[in-house]
Amino acid sequence: MKKIIFIFFLYSSLVLGQKGFLERSRLIIPPKQIIRIDYPVFSGYEVKIWNKSKFALGVSTLNRVTDSVIKSFELIKGKTAELIVNEDLYLQFKNRFLTTLIFEYTLKKGRSIKKKKPRPLTPQRAFYLENNTAQSLPLLIPGVMSPNLSPFSRSGVDLPNGQKIYLKLNDKQILLLIVTDSIQNGARIDVASLIDNALNKK
Image 1 (cartoon, rainbow, N blue to C red):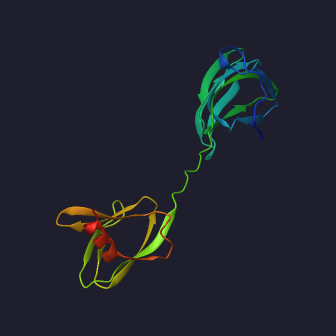
Image 2 (cartoon, rainbow, N blue to C red):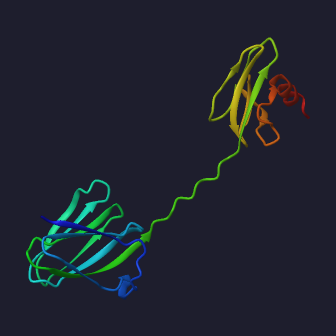
Image 3 (cartoon, one colour):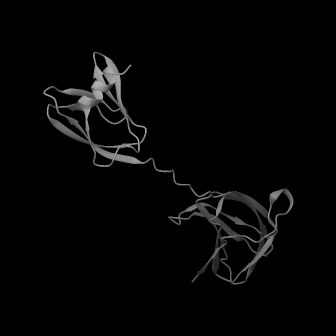
């Protein structure tokens, strides 16, 4: 029964050689065993393999999540092979014989996986828009909604800083408010006052 040995290389200490390849490594696979090698911090890499044994070496690439085989072949004695291992794959070497197998390989790493930097959050302001008049007030909040405030009603909004609020009047858009930190969370804003200020400003 074959045994599986899984080797993780989180941070390789191997030295870069010619053409960007790492120094050659040598591994020995005991009889009827499998060695799996993974470099999870590499965003893909190229590998060159030398079979130093008298028998064929099984070589495969497998999906890191599902363990499904993506590519598989046998490298006969004395031969060399090159292949590309994508970032979501790992390497597997299989010995199906009753004797040890020896192989060597070099690695040319791809780009290191960059950690995604979280986008800075735009501060949100939660407040109320109040209509204290006897008529409906058609508003426009671009990218959010186009509320129509009913008479003597209140509408809660949660908007990012910089968001603009307009009044729709005769096919025109009149700027009423730009959301800033000056608006307190939970504030009640009289839309009629905003309209009056916007229409009467010089």
